[in-house]
Length: 197
Image (cartoon, rainbow, N blue to C red; front, side, top):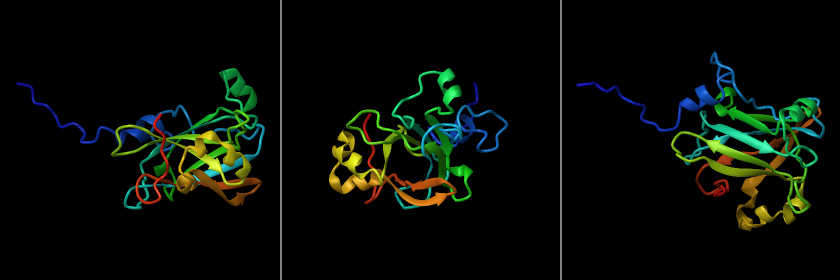
């Protein structure tokens, strides 16, 4: 009879760091993606999006992995590797919260443009962490885009009292780059709005 060894108790969890962003966690493997969406030569207003992920007890989650996708400063998504190499904008970032001493995610990017006249500038976020079997999807809007936010059809589909959970606040400046703060709360009274996509 074959003796079976114990399998991991979590179907999702500690493998994220190893498999999805190993260089950030100092594993001897190459990461396919980094926390940088826009290289210094990319056109547009360069910004940092910084935040933390909180669990239902209000504790910071140090082993979440987040993926960010967005259009460039003109509202265009890159269509090829050649375009990415030419513009310095790749439209995608992946970051683990355990790679920062404060267990934050820090994403270097440019402020996105509108992808259509009615859409406000936004960044799409996918959240993966222990204890959830399916990814959670949300968006980041910007507090200094009030007029565009007021017209955005997706943001307007969210109850008014919950929209603030999707809006990043401009809090500081890092050299020439504005810093936007965007925390993600997985549960609780201030739970971030997640979309069923």
